[in-house]
Length: 204
Image 1 (cartoon, rainbow, N blue to C red):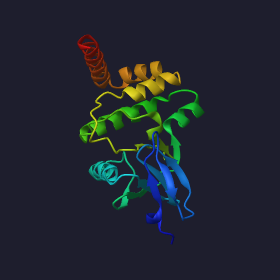
Image 2 (image 1 turned 180 degrees about the horizontal axis):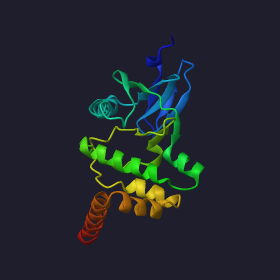
Image 3 (image 1 turned 180 degrees about the vertical axis):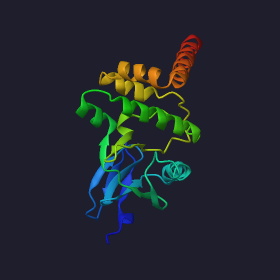
Image 4 (image 1 turned 90 degrees about the horizontal axis):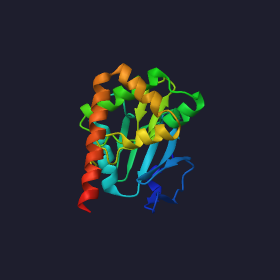
């Protein structure tokens, strides 16, 4: 078996660069923290540019292993994590293929965000592309290097992404119907965020 530990990834301005890959494992994605290669039909490895980023993501994945919202963890090294390969579509791809927002997906989004909060994720601000819909129609979230580091209690980027694809109104309407209490929390946090930005502008 080829050694994925020989793959070298380095930091870049917007995303990492794969400096060395003497293996035949295909690159299936990359971002600011690392690059992901598929090892088998059910496993992939994320190679990090920096050891501390790997450690941060490992802590989050370990804390959430008992909850079915993140990939299963198989092996961890100084700059790599071997985890479950999720076969399916990112949530933005899934919604664009549907052309509308199914209510059961909104319900899964609410449950996932509430579970992240329960697990003490300080950052709930994930992008649509970081949510994956697997072949069993389960919703999982990936890319957790900052989930215990940054403090973003409002899913601002998620809301922005939904607005860009024209599904924000449907999402908010469904959230209000499905979970009025959670809708109230979102509204309350949004007001606090607006006030915080206003205070900053007045200071400067």
